[in-house]
Image 1 (tube, rainbow, N blue to C red):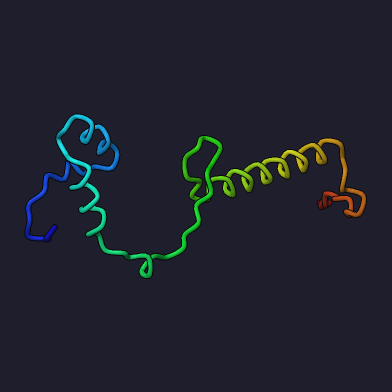
Image 2 (image 1 turned 30 degrees about the vertical axis):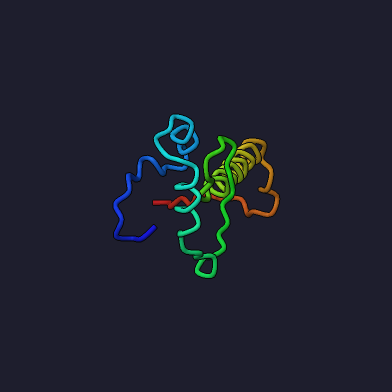
Length: 102
């Protein structure tokens, strides 16, 4: 199959090509010839990494951001609880208000 030859790309959509073959819109030999004519670009491929999130969608760093936000919130909550209980104040000097006599 030459590049100059017009093809209906909808017939060659890999998501529905089997249906098109079953319905007679495309024959198997034409499909096989089309696949054989495609260039092998494996040497140009780059390795990639994608972590999937809990919702099955790509993560894009959301997990790290959520973990950091949760850790920050937990630290702030612990600091607030410690301040309420007076923890961490043992080494601090007491503050004495200065008064001036007239």
